[in-house]
Structure formats: structure tokens, C-alpha cells
Length: 293
Image (cartoon, rainbow, N blue to C red; front, side, top):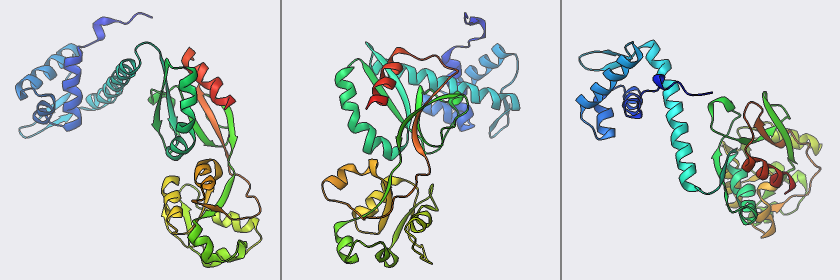
């Protein structure tokens, strides 16, 4: 469908509006854009004339968005962000395609990024851009082709492809392992336990799987697996970590796995992509490669 150009203000006006709305100040917007305050004020007035309504309420000391201005600012900010991201992606790879992927931070650094070199060798003209996300999000508000999701195989409005199970194992540093003096699970009752915010009952479930009662499960709390891994490496406690996130540390002896009964996974890893958006050839190539590797 053709774009109705009469409804498209110039990007100069929109940039002045976006900065003014964000700062709630024409002066601060002017400083950011390297313009004069009067120039920004003229841009805003020209945009209001184009729209046929005021965007700001002017006061002697400040400016405030109108209700309609607030809604318009949200839409314009998102649109400018998409244009900027698309331009950056094009400049990064002008002769090939791109894939924008939402990922969990530690999963990307410990599992995905080490694998991407193989993809780049096979498909040098496709650039994979990674954007970290800790929580699920709405694809409608993101310029993403897909995301890697942990949990159940549920995501409204998305096609879901299974990647792998989540095998969680107890690990600690070699020095702490020596202090424990044996690999029996009962010995964990005397050592600090490292906890992850997003999996608050993991240790409770793990001790239940070992048929061990431990009245106190106190220990430091972290909001990312990368912090838990670092704390375990420095001997601050024993951690429950997905094996795929610490393969390198296990292989080189930086972390030791403690023998134990397996803990049933709370979820799995999935690749999800929105069904409302057309699939680019670049993404289809990347998806086929990822599911095979």
C-alpha cells in the first residue's frame, strides 16, 4: 500500500519534537540537536500547523505535552527508532541481509556467540544482530525477526521451534570442592548457595529431587546467570546452572559438577518468530542453521 505522503512531516520537525518531548524542554532539545531554542520552537510550531492541533502546553518556565501529544510522541519515538535501526543495519551490511534476534544475555555470550562464527563462514553476507532481553516482550513493539525464549512452548502470535532442553547441574569452584571434602549431596548443607531471581525455588526443588531436607536455603541473590557463574568461579558458593552455559568452564576445570539426581527442567529453549510478520530469506537461512546446530 502506498504511503500517504501528505501525512508525513519532515524528519527535521520530528526530531525536534522527539527531543523536546523526551526532555520536556525546547532549550534542552536545542542543546542536544545543536540548534537554537528559537529554531526548535519554530519546528514544533510548524509540526503543530501540519497536524492541526497543539502538541505542547507552553508555560513561562516549561513546556508540557498535551494528552494527544503524549500519544503522538510514543508513536514517533518508536518510528524514528525503527528508521535509525534499519539504517544502521544497512550500513553494517549493505550487500547482504540482516537478522535481528532477541536473546537472553548469558545464553548469547556463552552459547550463541561462540557458534555464530560457523554461521558467518557459511553465510558471510548475512549479519546477525543481537539484542538482549531478560523477559518476554511484544513483537509489535520491537524491530526483531525472532527471539530465543526459555520456558513453556507458549507465545501468542508466534511460531515456536524447539531448540534444546535445559539440564541444570550443581557446580562449584575447585577450591570450594576441596572444602566440601566429598561429592556427596549431603555436604551441600554446609556451604553457601547461589540463587537466581528468575528461578527462586530452584534449590528447593533440587534438594527435593535428592530427597534431602535442608531447613535453610540462604545465600546471595543475582538477577543474571552471568553473575551466578562469576560468583561460582570465585568460590563464593555452589550454583545451579544450565550445563549449556558453562561447557567451557567445565571442560577447562574452572568449575566442577557435583554428582546428583537429575532435576526435572522447568522449561526448554525455543526460537520464536511472529506470525504477523513476513519471513525474510536471511532469517529463514539463519533459522534452518540454528535448528540444525
